[in-house]
Image (cartoon, rainbow, N blue to C red; front, side, top):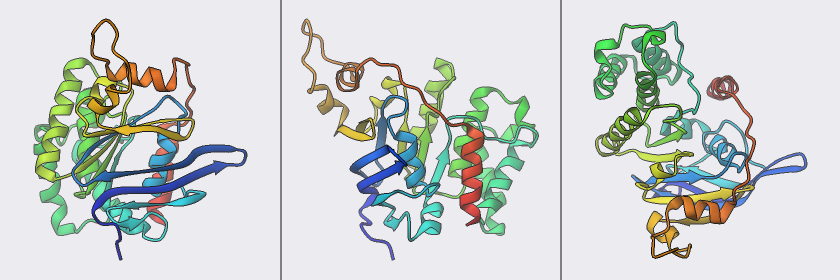
Amino acid sequence: MPVNFEFAVLVEHLIKKYKDITAVDDISFSVNKGEFFAFLGPNGAGKTTTIKILCTLIRQTSGIAYINGYNTLTNRKDVRKSIGLVFQDPTLDNDLSAYENLNFHAKLYGMDKKRIKDRIDYILSFIDLYNYKDKPVKLLSGGMKRRLEVGRGLLHSPSVLFLDEPTVGLDIQTRINMWGFIDKLRKEEQTTIFLTTHYIEEAENCDKIAIIDNGRIIATDTPSELKKMVESKNGEIPTLSDVFISLVGKGIREETGTAIDRMRELSRALKR
């Protein structure tokens, strides 16, 4: 039975430890339904670990998290049905066609067989790839592949879509088009967006931002309110970059993990 159903995401005192390392250190936050939420932080800050917990790929050490009212520990199957996930790195099968990639994903999620074809056709049209449905993914452009990955994440009509660096490596025009598409899906699919990004300007259009560093959330608010935390210089309005640097500093961080590792975790989780 779902609880706290008013929120799309609810996290309370979440902690994740790996032996002597605390990757996520007692964080709490909420995301309203239909909200565009951004999770910002340097490499190694705890963003990916938090997403893995919310997507039931790993278990927290303590604390509690709900997705669409379902507990990520006790209602794992319901959580998985409620979410879509787009990894930072490409995870499509390059030898399969666009249609075959979506069809495989639909079967992996146990979608109704009678619904699969119509839903795939709708998604391919929605992301403007219907005319390329039979083309092997390896022959698609980078922008097309990213649209296909987002479309795959939406295939089973999730209430929450997690986007982990969705536009990394794309040129400016493709990034703009990608965000136009994502904004369109928010309106048509009534989807809550949970974004991690290193492009600060992409967070400007978010409803709310949480900044995390060293496993702790150090600020959560709207973009306009976060900017008020930094004093203006020479009369200029502070940017989100100014806010970010003032809170987490300028140090370079290292990050580990690969797309293959993530897909293995997802496949293992879905089989449980």
